[in-house]
Length: 220
Image 1 (spheres, rainbow, N blue to C red):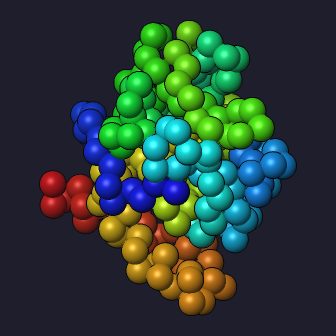
Image 2 (image 1 turned 90 degrees about the horizontal axis):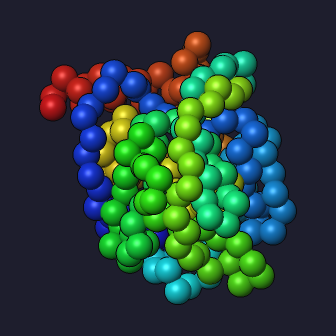
Image 3 (image 1 turned 90 degrees about the vertical axis):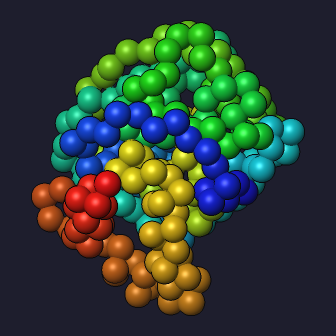
């Protein structure tokens, strides 16, 4: 599994968006085999994640935190389709691996930066080894739900496409560092970590995460 401490990223213009997510209908693979809708994903579930390079089969990683979980929300999502027929939906500020060597170099790009002809990395077939495919269509769609699960390593496979768990709410390396205490707590006391990370309020995100974002924006 790829460790988010080691990824690079291109920083887009900072917007007022406090986070980004996937819709309720996005699909992940439980235990690397069984498709499950994002809205049904639970803490502690092992899902398909991203290897350290594009010649290694995808691996399993554990979901330990949701930075966003809202069911009754309609929101705009970037919809991108690949030459192989994969269609990924994600918020414009969510990071994914774009570029022929992206899984080797760890370069992340926000969804709003993706254009037709760009290369993303998809996982399919029995060996589940990521391979590059070109994006053939990019558009915006309205869909229900806002969900942002986090794995211990900071990556996962959604709708068959390799993505980061992080968004432009924080630079990925900063976000991975800020969540280090929660990851440690999860390993020793998962129930307590689950309570601390419980989404709250109308925004569907932990109150402390919004506070950290406000402090970070004031600092930068």
